[in-house]
Length: 213
Ligand code: SF4
Image (tube, rainbow, N blue to C red; front, side, top):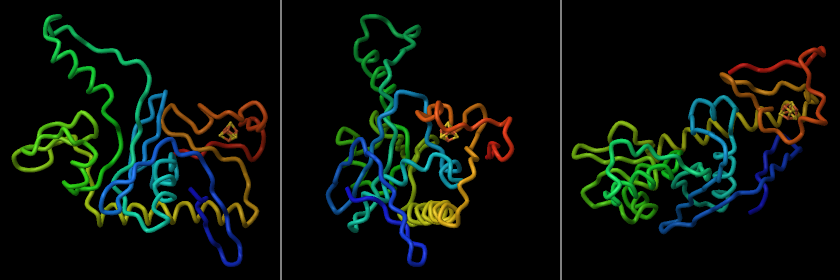
């Protein structure tokens, strides 16, 4: 996958990364999966604010040849813990279903039933809850925890992410390389950063501060 290019006048910033998994779906749709061992949760507001842009940057890179967004997801790969206190040990089907629920991906999917059924082929025609993606279809449409977005809203969100990426790249091109890692609740960009030992970020120093979102 070629790097994502962000242009600012004559300058171009190339953004590279390693996408864990890309699935090309019928009708020119594309879906991204990012495997996670931590507790990352999809949050639209965080992406718009420039915090945790990864899922959308990967999706944009995968769409660079004109593909359409099917969805972008975290897949948590840590060993699941299942609460079986209300399930009998003989009820293997319920146990298996509880197990499958823990592997349901977290993210957003486009509100298009053909695409949804291409991602989860086991989703019944009459709806129900998917064990694969955050979609729960009731008689009157999507249920409460479904994380679906219309094609138009998906496109608007990608435009907002685009603007955020451009703003950040322009700041760097303008020479602003001050260290302001973002912090949200109890987690900061530094929490899982591999460069902690060498970057010298320390709030004791002038100019080093967290950007709260
Ligand atoms: S540890 Fe340093 S390099 Fe890593 S996110 Fe924090 S400030 Fe940035």
